[in-house]
Length: 158
Length: 267
Image (cartoon, rainbow over all chains, first blue to last red; front, side, top):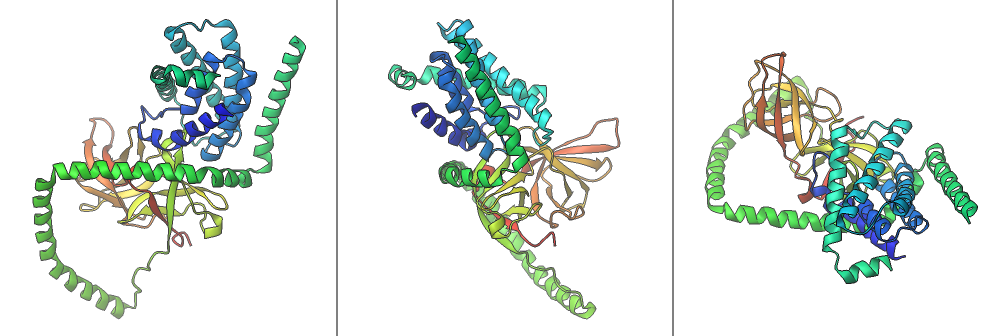
C-alpha cells in the first residue's frame, strides 16, 4: 500500500508540476524514478509488479499513448529491476547510478518498441529524446536518493 | 520453487499481453473516463496550484520592471486612444457597407469554458486534459483558445467527461498562420523548448523580430486572427527558397488553467 500511495503521488506530480521543466523534449518520469528506488533497495520483483501495474494504469489514463502500453512497460521494467537486483551489486551510489541508467534505458527502449508495434505516431521518440529522458531520469532518481533522509528511506523500503 | 517462479512470470506476462491487446480491441474510453474522474481532482488541484505560483512569479517580475512597463503602457494607451476615433468611423463604414451589400457580420463563436486538469505525463508540454467531453458537446478537431483570443490547440481525443487537447507546441500540429502587419504567410508547428516554428515563409516576404503572428484561417481548422505568438528570431539560409522564424508563444501554459473550446467552428 505504501508503494502504491507513493507512486500515486509521483504520477500526480509527473503529470503536472514536473512538466514545467523539460530537457530536449523529455520531462522527469517520477514514477519510474521511484520504481527504480524500490527495485534498488527492495530487489524482489514480485513486490514491484503490482505497484508498477498501478502506476502504469494511472499513466495510461493520463497519456495519449495507446492504452496498456505504459502498464506493460512498467511491469516489464519491474521484472527487469528484479532480475538486475539479483545480478548487479547494490552497495553504493555509483552502483545506483548505473542501476538507474540501465533500468531507464530498458523502460524507454521498451516504450519505443511498443509504440512502434501499436503504430502510434503521436509521440516522436528520436534517439536524442530517448537519451535526454534517460539522463534526466537518472539525475532525478539520484537527486531523490540524496534528498531522502535515512528515516524516509527506511519507511519506504520497510 | 523455481517452477513456481517461472509459472508466476508466465501468468503475469500473459495477463499483461491480454491487458494491452484486450484494451485496444475492446475500446477503453469508459475505463479512461472513470480513471480520469478519480485522478482529475488531484491533478486539477496541482495544476491550479502551479498556475497560481506561475502567476505570482509573473507578478513579481512585473513589479520589478514596474516603472518601465508603466511608462510603456501609458504611451501605448495614448496611441490606442488616438486610434479609437478612426476605429469608430471604420466600424460605422463597415456596418453600412455590409448592409448595402447584404453581407452578414461574422458570427459570434460558441465558446465552452473548460479547466485544464493535467498535462500529458510523457509528451510533456504538447498535450493537456480538460474537464469537458462528449456530454458537454465537445467533438474531435474543435479548436481551443484561451481568453484574449489566443490559440491553444485542438481537441484530439474525447471521452464522456474529459478531452485531450493537443497544444500548438506539439511538432505534429500544423497551423496556417500569417504575420498580422505584413500578411506574410506560412505554416506553424511546435519546436523543442516550448518554442513555435513559423516555417515555409517566402524568402523575400517581410518579417521582423517582434511581429505578431496570427492564424490565417486558410486551413479551415482554426478561425482566423487568433493570436499565436511574437517573432523571436528569423532564420534564413543561403540555400533553399524558404526562411523560418521562431516564435515566443502567447499561451503561457502553466499560468493559465482555463480555456475555451470553440464548439461550432467546424460545422
